[in-house]
Length: 430
Image 1 (cartoon, helix red, strand yellow):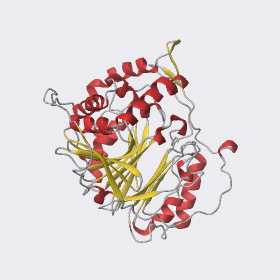
Image 2 (cartoon, helix red, strand yellow):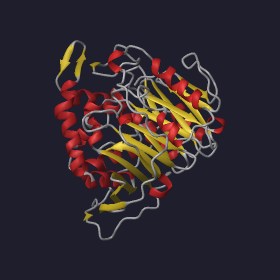
Image 3 (tube, rainbow, N blue to C red):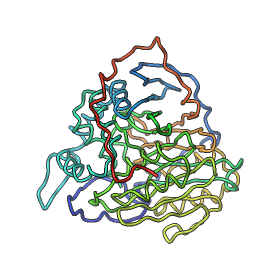
Image 4 (cartoon, helix red, strand yellow):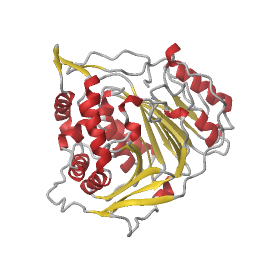
């Protein structure tokens, strides 16, 4: 879902024609009436089973949801990811590149390209100088661990940049018990079948802040996440496609997850690095109870604090920030104001119900950032939106304590990542 009701700009490098969700509610988007849903948040899942292990990493199921634990250097984390989820990574990459990419119609100077992968490779080449070394190393590890060619893995990890969702942060007087709630509605499109390979990635990179990435097999960037310092992030796409001279959105998100210990530090990573297309973000700090909305495009950077208004966000909410587009923004703001002061986890989940979430709703996540509890719903295998699916509850601080099982099957780890050199980039965090 887009933050603004706007048309895509002409692209200086390439023109992409995509089947994307529109930015305002229309007749085709109106949901069918459904029974009232519970306002009680699901219990936190505790049952777990370790499936396999690789080096310091391991794959488990918690409440029936795959949880991938990766730890070590960036390369080791990527290798563990690729090895433990090899089948999923192969299925995902092959479907996206061999099947779904045929839906992409790409032109450059009037010439149609039949291979989006080649065009994406060209864009990525222009971004190489902006990409931190850890990201490159982790991609290489993912390719080596899964056996999928590096260029294919890299192309798939670019997909979030082609889509240009709703979000809110509420705390203090807005919530029943003063907890920080950060809701994130991801409207990418259910026909990409990403929902068939969802994972919760628990990452512990050497020397960095442990983080949770709500993602999919084969993707190392982030669009939804929280870290051990109680910083949670979500993004929304805007316009500006074709402005590729900067750090891709999903890399900035991952960067902030593993670096930021405070709200200010998270904001600085987006402010102080060169950016690409127009994106909007909600960042929440569970320690301070503060959140911020952020406009961060290639040529603009602005923030909106809780309780503030903006010409695009005319409805102020005390102790809250609400971001969405068109009719969805109006409805989300209305829901928040009606429940103001009584919002708990169950009511916060209901704020994200249809039609705030679109038909293209891939996943919904509610972070109770102040306690590290969170609830996740994914789109159905039949393409039905995540908002219509059951939620599962977890607690990130507990996931961080999980250990591997020595009796679980062990997969071989990388022989060595000593050949990988660590080089600097212009900006390496706050």
